[in-house]
Length: 334
View 1 (cartoon, rainbow, N blue to C red):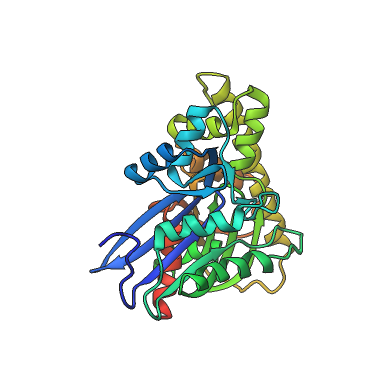
View 2: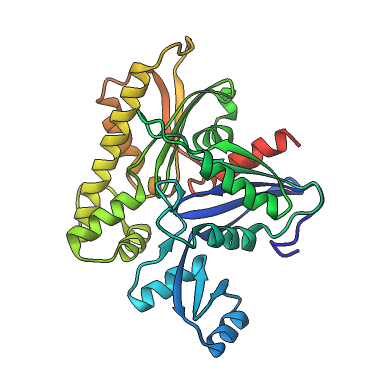
């Protein structure tokens, strides 16, 4: 079975992130994942080029005199051409400054999940509003739902931070804090017995680190992201300027996230009275570098955080936890 062939009654968990789109499926009690970069790059159209891309199985769309290469291969073309990829989303929502955003996110999503079998369900993730803001996420959620409906799916949405809770906190009856540190946002959800009590996002995440580091070093953000994902780790000792700059902006992101956590929980009303400490789980691509959890825990423990925590740990697989949580939510309603 190819990944774009749907099975009857198969439920799909879909993490639609700023940086990547990830799917989760369950078959024979085994969960499998697929992922594509949520980005594209434009190259000049030539019939020979199109034929080669088709032969190599590269996902693309023809747009007049250009070929839009999307998904994972866009990163390789961007690096070869010394250009930056274009994004369908920014800060967790559809990119209003990119006219191709809706069409390309549909193409990338379809490359992963195909068209639905009759009555097939998909549960997709959406971000929370930024802390202290009343940002309207209605258009973003409605557009994603329309894209999935046009592919034939029965679509339901799920808060991204809550998806982390569903994925990682079954042992505490889904009570705890789930944090997804992605490309555009850090999404936070405090859940009590699976019920979301407090949700918000922080608009400093992987893209902020990449863009800020690129501005200081003169590298392209795309190149910074590749270097960050390949070799960066947080230990206070850096081999070169790029590593040092990445460390500075990672610290900035972590300190901003911790400050937002403390502010949100100190200001929250009607929090349930919990008799024992609760777990906190970190996930998402920006939480992957070695040393991230230790640095986050050090800053949080020093912040007079008002909630007693039993543990602070990283998700079993930070890159797929949100999609897995969406799958769990979808299966529970199937």
